[in-house]
Image (cartoon, rainbow, N blue to C red; front, side):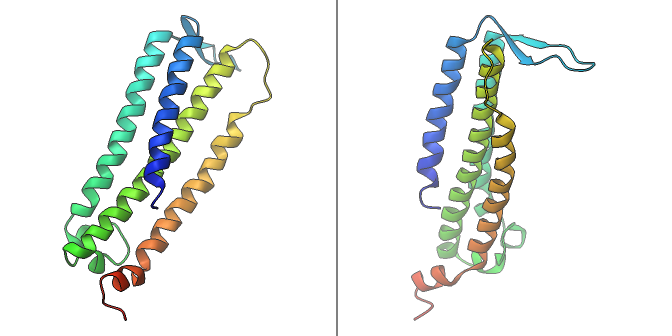
Amino acid sequence: MKYTRYFWFMSMIGILVLHLFAYASLSESVKLQEPSEGMSEWYVYKDAFFYWGLAFIVLSNMMILLLGRIIPLMPRDFLPVPKRQFWGRDMNTRKFLRDEVNGWFKGIGLLINIFISVTIIDILFLNREIPSNFDPSVVLWALIPLFLAWVVTFILVMRNTEPVRRELGELA
């Protein structure tokens, strides 16, 4: 989880560049939905798409980062991590907990940014009149196992306290 900060930061730059590109390349009315049975096309103004999208990107990432900051500060009995008694026992273990939780939540932010990016790309393709073979549902469905794997990884890392104990000098 050491490199998640870097990948999350790069995803923020990438999603903002993609969002600016979408704003520059879309027409004044942006189609958000193809017509289907019983449903009509759904359009929004380009400015509304840009500002609402930007607000969603910023707020979702801020909420994820805020959760990453708040959880390590919770009382020991309320920590939502395995082996909470170990992780909440003193300031040294809390420091390791903070680092792990922050890295993990940045990974969640990275997955959310990928989801938003694929959605923006889908809207770009939807508004082009040129047919495309790009199917965003494949990428979006692939994010579900990635998210589940990320949750399992967090649980396994939090259950294995041996590296932290070794670094704290508790294990010889």
